[in-house]
Length: 169
Length: 169
DNA sequence: TGCCATCCCATGCGATCCCATATGTGCCCG
DNA sequence: CGGGCACATATGGGATCGCATGGGATGGCA
Image (cartoon, rainbow over all chains, first blue to last red; front, side):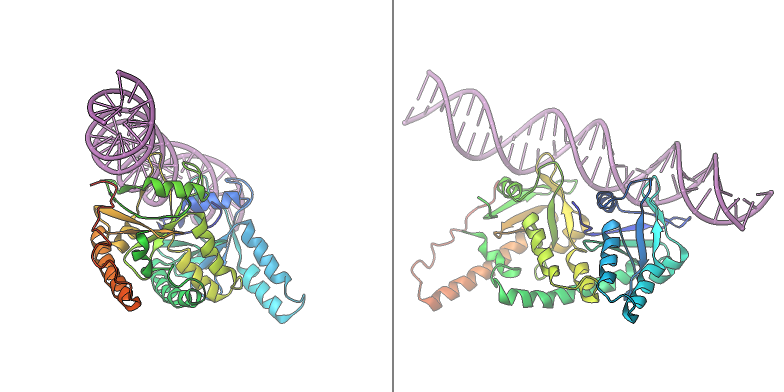
């Protein structure tokens, strides 16, 4: 597997450390992260949410690509550069698969005792569990509506609930 | 055969494990699932039914397809990703053809002692047997009615036989 | 020299693997 | 044509491994 999927909630211990979910670590290793050695997790405050974005090399390259698409000295690029690179922290995973989150990052996401890791494919996010619960509800509602858009065009009978009666051949 | 068809009902054991019907396993293997190795079953709560949707690589690609059209760092994409990837669990099939269902998934589908596997072609669903029975009754009634509209009332009572399509009793 | 970050070790719990068993099915042989 | 044997599947239980988590030790930096 090579994508970040599903969600996990882990504890922050007294020293500010938190275990990175094992499946995510596996993805990071495939993504060029040499466990215990050089490399690291790129982590920065999410632009529009009280959460942290994080990922490996692939994420770093994506950010580069995003900036590359903008004219060199545009305001937009400067803003994005500052917003993205400016707050990036390179986190290292210790021998036990844990990272320690700097205070500045914890503050942005409102992290105190627990962290919810949310897989988003190319990257993952770290949330305060409660705030994430809200966000998830919104996201679900949105998918609901988006799905109808998709379903309308393609195969109306194949998706979701109507399918149960298709069991018999 | 390369599609999920028919229905099977298996037990959940004390550890929360349940056997994936052998025919479904066969489909999964053709779909890129390397038994015992990397890969897995992608499983998430169905949006409009108390059931779980599940499938192999083909299903995963479908999910990717939904996101493919959206710009990389838009808020919209993040939101969709949360709902799509965030709720997905990657289940691994053990050496005996069983998966173990996490509590979060079991809760959504109301699964306790038994699971009804329902083939839907590209994917399959997992239901609480009782809830599925209800759902099927409604569906059957609907079909009946629809048939009358078409004037195809040729075999009004013989069709469904109330069969015991479950693998075992 | 004191504080902070990293590393190492210990532990409990849950997940995974492996083996055993029963039952049903298909096949082969008589 | 019928009985028995071999195989596959589903299911239960025990053993083992990995992961998350807590605490102590060690080294670097101020």
